[in-house]
Each structure stands twice: as C-alpha cells, then as structure tokens.
Length: 116
Length: 114
Image (cartoon, rainbow over all chains, first blue to last red; front, top):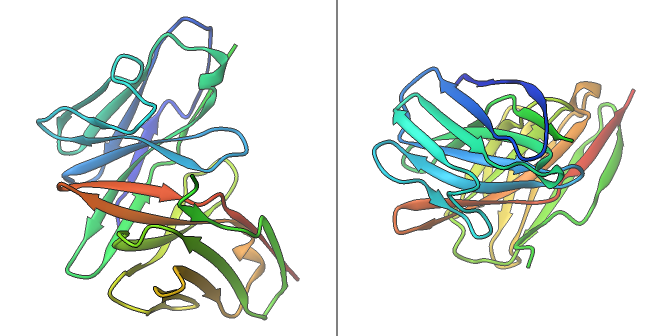
C-alpha cells in the first residue's frame, strides 16, 4: 500500500485568489494523479504528474488554471488559480502500484476547498 | 458520454447477507478495473482490482467478477457488515501511449442494516 498525506485538509478562499495543495507519499512513485470531486459528483481526473516532465491534463483542464509541480518522486503540488465558486470541490491526489497482472491505486484524504 | 456507469445509486442489505454492486462500461480498451470504498470526508479506499484478462479476483470478503462480453463487472461482499456502509465507486483504467486515464462511475451508496 501507500500512505499519502495532503495539505491543507480544507480551506475557504476568496474568489480570484489561488490555493496550492501539497501531496506527499511515503515512498517513491513514478506517476501521481490529481482528481476533483465536485459536490454530489464522481471523481474526475484532472492530470497525471510524472517526475521530470510536464503534467498531462485531461480534457477540460488546462495548465494555466491548474498548474502542477512534481519536483521529486514523493511529492507534488496542484495549484487552483484565479478561483471561482465553481472550483469548490474536494481535490485528491493518488498514486498507483502495479505488478504483472495486478494494479492498485491509493488516494490521499483530500483537500476540501470552498470558494466564496 | 459516461463510459463507466453504476446504475444503482443506493443499495440496502441485511447484515450477514451478500452485497452485490454492479458496474457497466462501454470501452473495450480498459485494461484494469478497480473498486473503492469512500466514507464521508475521507479519500477513497482501494478495495480490489481485476485485470481485463481475468474473470474473477478474490480478496477476503471481496470478490470482483468481470464479464467482458457483457462489459459488466460486479463486486460481491460476503458477509456484509455494518462497517461496510459507504459509497462504492468502480473505476476503469485505459492505457494510452504510456499514460493512464482513469474513469470513475458515479457511485453506489451501500447501507448494511444491523
């Protein structure tokens, strides 16, 4: 398994400001993933962050709005820029572990963001 | 276009009985399927996964069945316990050019009655 921590656990922010969310993993991983879960919705993948390369963003998400850093194999940050109330969500980071025919994915506890 | 669907938003089961959670998908290129449990105010907890080359995987009380011809998978929990009450998500993984894309279903809220 993997132990993942996120900071902050929650925040209330003013519209137009930015918030950076940190994700720390207890072991080295190649890929880290950032998700969003809006109220009453399922989880949506924002981007995949590989160490040493640009993050890969899913359709509907852009780097200017959600810049991601991946400075090493155990840490990543996601910034939510120029926030609006529509960005109010739970933001989650996750990592995957796989073998020949097995695969597991672990999530952090999430960051609950409220934009007013 | 919802590629992964959980058509039952909720399910109630008596303690000790079997819980069966269902998931349908449309993309035959998915290579792994995963199930998660989520409690309020927590991140999803990984339960079990299955490779697309298999039709069954077991881990303790949890068994996942995959029917590729029907593009359907199910999670069986036996016996169900009150602590299993949570929202359950299925997810599917597609691999494209060395990167992974995960698509989640909308979740099924399981309530296990004591």
